Image (cartoon, rainbow, N blue to C red; front, side, top):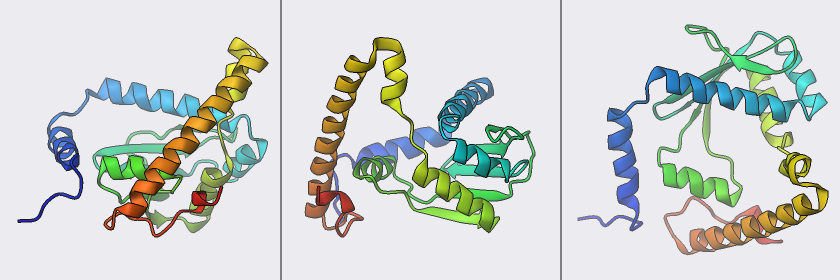
Length: 190
């Protein structure tokens, strides 16, 4: 009998079973997707180059999938994003292939991109990849608008130290775990 590689392996199984049975109501899904689009547009508006790249892809639909979660976005004439109309055919489909929620979180904390299956428009995929690589939310700037520059900078420094410590911890555990996906991470030489 095989033993699970993690004492928390049951959480992945629980997530699979519950996720297949418990689906949120459509209005809740739409509301979460709408809020996600608002957040993404807020971040995109801080990066004019990103808006120019999206403007060139105007009207194209990108569908994101992970397990039972699907979200389709369309590039707008303003170089931003909007929810694609129901039934819109995607020009590009990006499917996250990591099935385990814990594995996905672990990879994200390490700073790794999850493995993604790409189907569709190659140029659109290249633009999405550029956005993922270059667009970052300036949390400190947004926080400074609320609490001021100095406290926001201090909070940002504290958050960066916490993230670095978490990455070192997760990276150390992944190196000790022979079944872990990493054969070394770029964040180790800091």
